[in-house]
Length: 213
Image 1 (tube, rainbow, N blue to C red):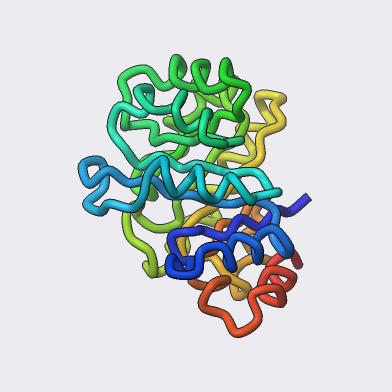
Image 2: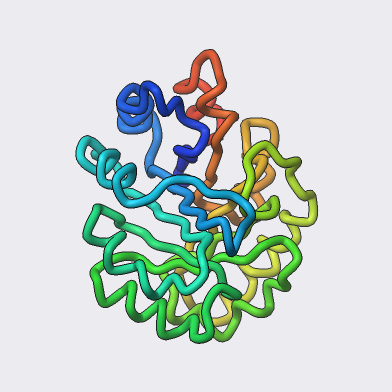
């Protein structure tokens, strides 16, 4: 089943409740980008915003940690409402241990890589994860152009997941919208993260429906 995860970084923060209700009604998952200004050269929001969204969300919260030492924060994000927590492979010394920590909290654990990191680097950790997030732009800023090599990366990863006999959804984030959703789904993606394409649209519900295919 294809799931659409609007990125709340592109939401209207002056009227956040309106956009939370929009996701509740039309989409499947809230995608929450947490940036620390160190792992990526940008800062987003933290626990208070996640907790506020969680208070009226009826769809799962997918927290994407773009921070160093994510192991220090996974428990607190679980406590403020995260259903899914992902972190970058190169943000910690022991990714397998962090994946286990997240799962021990009753939360789905995900691993993320940027476009310049080979998908093969994920292979040793697939058995410890519940989903994989492939960035189709470089993490840290919205509005970047989609990187076309992403399709092949999804296919390569999908083949390895099947080879290992696992059932792991592949999530894609960055420059995703109605124009490339069908090709991403055909390549093997199951969770599509879209920010501007949803929240800047005149009819966000129609955009989300179009992306499902």
